[in-house]
Image (cartoon, rainbow, N blue to C red; front, side, top):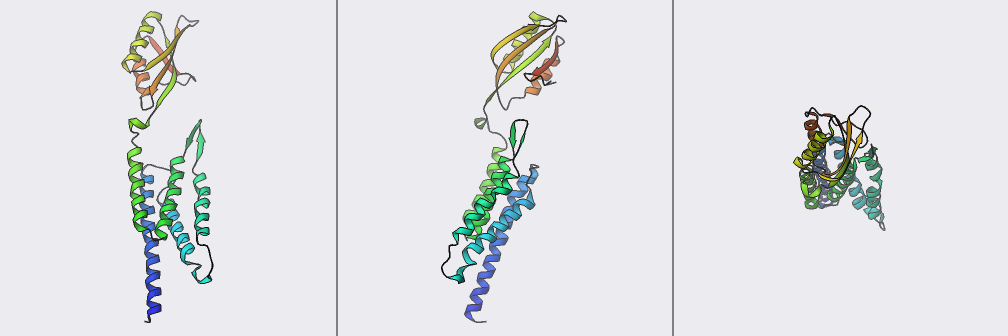
Length: 230
């Protein structure tokens, strides 16, 4: 085997190794996403990482024999082109946006594949484990990342004085900040107590409503949009 052929073989084996490493990194990220029942799982992330690595290898080495070429152009198209895949992961449901994290993960996985395809092995592998670690840690919703939310709670009760005292004590027990309270007399001698409260978004509102319904004088609990909480 002459020296030129030997060099070519070693080069091709290295490129194959990059493809395999990108596949492993994509698998690691996809496996974490699959365990959380996300829209994009193992297959999607593996294909994105593998294909991005392949495109990067083509960008760097596929046009080397043409003389004057700009290898960055193909790589740039991969970065922008992967956006269509991420956009398919994002949807709006009941005024909330879902899939942003998954879409961002797809985009980042593409970057990992490209970095490995460019021969930046340490950067690609490190980013893989950083992504997985961040997903696991931040999925637990650390308290410093959560925020206060506001809600209007509507209690329907049978006795005005006792009900008002009970609702006040209940909100105090659950450490809810009450901004204002209004009482409306209903036609059947019941009363409707509306309390605008501020609470931490990690707060268990269902637990509060369940406890309220255990009190005989409380007939129902719902939020401001009249969705029952019990």
